[in-house]
View 1: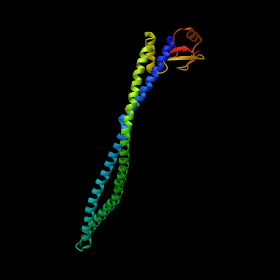
View 2: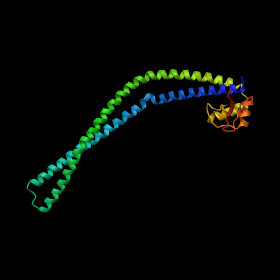
View 3: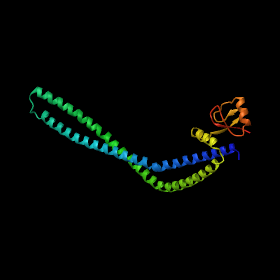
View 4: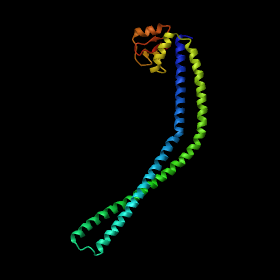
Length: 234
């Protein structure tokens, strides 16, 4: 096998290794998210908190409502009881009465909206709780499958590492170091072909002198356009 073929074979192995690694990372991320369970639990807790806050606010408003009703009743007794004869005092009480009535109306208006918020939060909580229970059951089965997939991927990955090590032995240190360096920033295209005078890595047309050099070379040539290892397309 020629040096060029060994480099191309090494690049193909590296692409497969990268694909296996990405698949493994995807499985790890799924395990971390527990198939959406983490998000669903967060949503359940959020709805519980919203329901609690709305109920607390309703209770506070109900308490305030009772206090205001008591004040209204008290002022009405004073207003209509005939005990007030001073006009100035009467005007002051009427102003206070009007203010309390406005506060009472606002509180009465606020209670239904907060009760609605509590009911909506409770409804969403029921929906999320149902989804959570179903997802927990599905996740148990999915987790077994993921562990099986992960084992297969790791076995294949380790086998490919051995193949890579074997392929490396056919490549000189100079070319291997250059390939590894370029692969870090250009995975899958450290060694590329030149087709119709164009580098297939960076798509730059090469000068004729460089094309002739690549055509006649026994080993890959470092391209002036992108520093990749270039071989001529047969």
